[in-house]
Image (cartoon, rainbow, N blue to C red; front, top):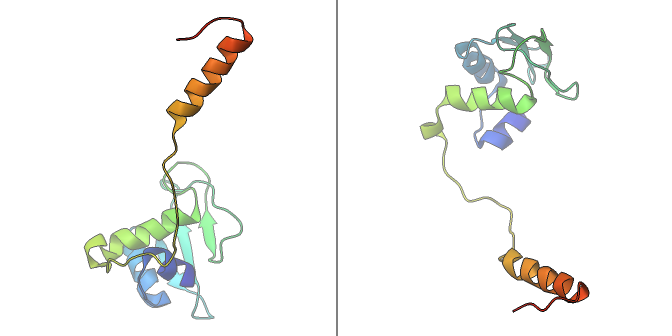
Length: 121
């Protein structure tokens, strides 16, 4: 549940996750430990899921809708309602700069022209 709560930005229980996934036509139930949810993906929505997922997922590999664990997380977010998710500022910081590819390309082109003994204007 922590993966779903962290990625979507909500704090809901396993019972609520199972209810939301059932609303999205994914048969689901809370496992015995109370922390995980067992999900049965119907053949019309099944793809290939990573075996590293921490929830138990029974998948018949046929179609394309659910390919990765993030697809199940997306279904939880859709069923929860995007407008019900509180907007927050990310906790990560990033210092970035503008990439000037045009200058790099011009310099490379000019160098190749000089090497080829042509004059560039």
